[in-house]
Image (cartoon, one colour):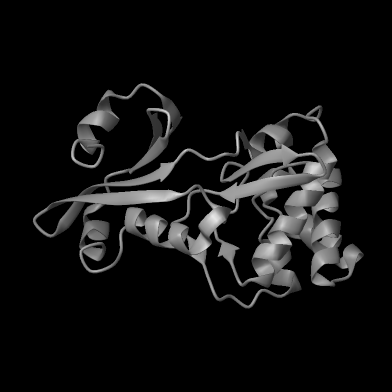
Length: 216
């Protein structure tokens, strides 16, 4: 029923999780639907012969397994051969927090422990050759579990698999994480420990390669 009436159900839902270029809404108790912005005319042509963002999100979610909210389906609406609307549907994540929360709130419980866990989580991804090309504080969900933290990835259409991720490339993956130097250093040290890299070198690289606008 959801897939049959997806456009109407999505339009009627008032439970907005995120709304900028793309819109994400919760549908009922179990589903999250992401509506991708209508692409430009030339991207519509590209998507007539290559997978849309919605389709890529679904395919990559299947590959990621428990590292992302469970995928349900994707839907593409075309006019002729050209893509007009597209949606990606997943189950609601068991992770109730977004990394942005702990980054912005310096009093968040066990803040540095969570950052260390995030460094180790990132290292585990890189050891498997998985690279999230839009690895930002809004695209990582988490749930604290005592001395361990569970993480899940969202916004999947720019995932990369089968990558060879060396120290420099791995440290660069933290460049979008907009937080203080102490927190970044904790992430970098935990990352280095898992991957067998020099801790001081990882700290230096992570701090050096963060986005310039975040340094300000």
